[in-house]
Amino acid sequence: MSRSQRILYQLIAPMEVSIGPQEIERRRAFLERYASPGFKIEVKSIRRGTASIESSYDAAIATPGILDSIREAALDGQDGIIVGCFDDPAIDAAREIVRVPVVAAGMSAMHLALQLGEQFSIISSYDNESGRAKAYVRRLGLADRFASTRGIGLSVVELARGGTTALDRIVEIGRRCITEDGADVLVLGCMSMAFLDVTIELQQRLGVPVVSPVIAALKTLEMMLSHGVSHSLAAWPPPPEKAILDRGF
Figure (cartoon, one colour):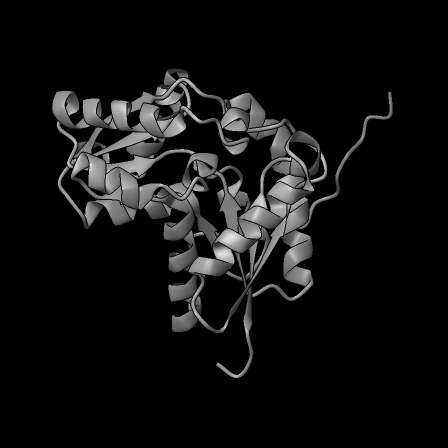
């Protein structure tokens, strides 16, 4: 590469408000630690949204901000973008409006899991997220390789703030995924969980591969940029130009 390629990690919440600016820098440093030489990491939050995405409603609220920020990033010269949420909100719309590669973290993690075992389970923050996870797995055509989704009972914000009980809860739930659901690979289904940087310890304690969606997304984007490829225009063509209407009352 003749220059460093810029990668934007797009946060899907206004994290300066929900956690604080120090958390944005912590996540940038984490990504920088795992990035290959020749890639420069930047992290940006959206201007308006809920503190985290834990429902389809939350994702809908965040979507305009995600798309505005991604469009601005492409215009600013970013070479590739990661949508920093396991649910992959706004991913299809984002790929329609920019030509640089936009990587889906949840999709990246699950596709990596397929190369590591026969059946994967997703460990999420709450059990009530299992329905959305199952629907997304079916959409990706991975239902035959999907064992389960189980929650650890901690919110995304609690995980981001570094709750001391998180690691033991992940181990407990991960063991149930293995012994009761038949999983031989575990996927961390929450970016705040992944930013705890506990995958090595989890693998040692559980004896199966544990996939971080943060690292999976980063390495997927690095691979795309190194190969000089982006998403297909045949799959995600630019949307037709239309006026945005306002009824005015």
